Length: 172
Length: 444
Image: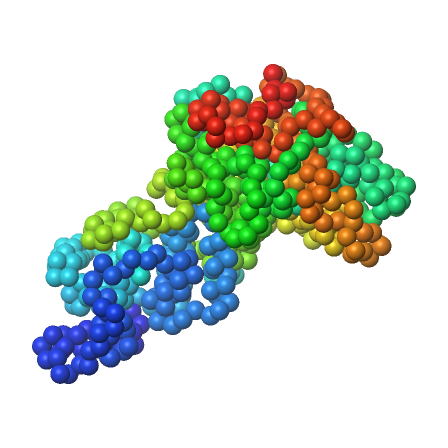
């Protein structure tokens, strides 16, 4: 993972942990059932039940790009990709193909296997925040921590691919 | 994408991909359904609004007040080319005998009802129902498309990889691969593709260098995805589009990769006469070329493809004639390719039909040659067009002409029941759903 991104995420996670222990340290705003933590202005879902609307292809591309590269895509990039998605019927197939291309992009910096395994619970939390904009439940965190711990062949790239191809990532 | 890196690697990748054997998804592993005439139908929507005068009637420049007549569609129709006042560069036909000799021509077909707009014409041709829609075109049609009938009523039901809708342009056309009909819809829809985007610059830039996950990786990702999906209340079934099954998805991804590699390597075969530069390619010809790639690599049972460029007739009659001439070459080229393929050769019927005609009277626009342009605003002339059905002798009546001036036979909405007849599922379609009839005159 990009060091800056990782640090920012770590700071967010630390902030959230701090929030759990001492609410006065973090300002919390309730906005239509969502929590806004002012650590980095990320709006978090309290539950995946809040995600009821499908992302359009344009939203999917824009959000995925931002989630992976930590920056917004250019207008031209979005226009190009919007045309590509319009031009093909099976959108999920095209999403998969697009993702597989993004994962080859030399500009993309993913967490290393060592980074992931140095603190698996933190990686799991970070991944949920990064792609789902919510904290994992205790069960989700436990499941992934155990899965990754017990299977040394799982890579951060595979975890990311699973999240991005999941149904929850299709919704907001 | 990093195109230079890709191009360096593409040769090896393409060579490898091209030598791999394909498990063909043509449905040949299925038992045959109904009484099929053949196992493959290519429905060529020779669209953009074709005037009867310059196509079937071979009037060339007569409508412009010039005494020059002749046939600019020499691959599809019999007749000598124009001998004077040439405003286009003639290409020698690719076919030694025109397609009319290899099938049945419905010479005077009617577009009976509704506005003669392109989306209306496409919708009528692909659903078997005329439509009055003129606003909010970007929605799926009300009645089932031919793809949905095909997939639902073939026995056994077919997967989406067996039918494709390939369009020259975008606009509302991507919406024609399935309908809003409550008993059909995306579950029975076709794969849709616009080659100029998917295999053009955008495809090369963003799709041509995917990471190849190994089977073990795929399995691990699937396990994690299954857990994630189990913890989310929505299934993704609400997703508004067609979806291929995992095996077919892999075949289609392989197809896209192979075709992008061929494109990058300059290995796509173009519908051009010998010695003609690729600079002469039109959107129609590019679409037809990739339509052939779909046919050749995936062997769908039902392929619908359109041409569109000759709609330039709204403002440029010279371009209209040129595009008509080139699209005709593309149709001949495609038929030639089909005949060169041992599997498709005697097992394919092709139907060529415009979306509708064009007005009798010109508008007020003149082109660089002083030729008047024509719109299509639902006058009687714009309701005149034709259909050409070609196929194997013994299945399709050869060299036959049905109807003529003053004796219209057949309608636009007959194409869907005719395709259902060819592919053997006509009798399974619920009564009352299709108002058109089968063009029985064309078949033995």
